[in-house]
Image (cartoon, rainbow, N blue to C red; front, side, top):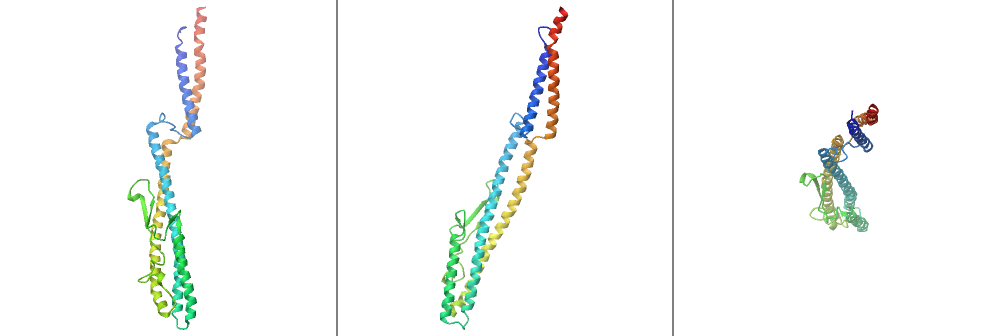
Length: 276
């Protein structure tokens, strides 16, 4: 027993400080929900978690990119569906005007509608756009969708776009030059309109194939993001049950440390009492 140096008190203070630090750490982890809050907690774990976090955010953006691509394709396909419907009407007018029971005056009325519908096709083609990008007038030949988080051909999906105006649709004679003002012209228009309908169907088929790829990409990205988030959670998130147990243990140790320290601080007084 010593009067000058109270070694038990120093030891009790050190243990108490350690318990207090551990208790504060447990409380901080439980309040934040994170096991790794800084490099001091787990340097390697923090580095891995931060890299995973960056990838998770990038995957989320790639998923949004793919969904934007689907929306753009749906916009183009919806417009082409309208154009396809107009083509059906143009073919119907061509067949109607080919009938010998109609007079030239009748065919003029048919041709007026025919011309107006051609104009509507060109109007639809000119105004169809997605976020300012024209989709059907030929000014945009292809669109590229970034559906991955790296720079490689496997991280992008492309779709080819063609001009779908009346001056580009049809066979040897384009739709823009067709007329149903006479029987001969009306009969010739039938085959050219069939070619134009084929052009539209081909483009819609391409759009549909790319749309399916983008839908698969969205599903895959969602699964990838979910799995990576789970892995990141294992590294960085706190185990509530385990940390609660740690907090309880550290709290008990701290209370015990306070009691022991109080008794240790009384030892010099006891020693003096023995002298007296």
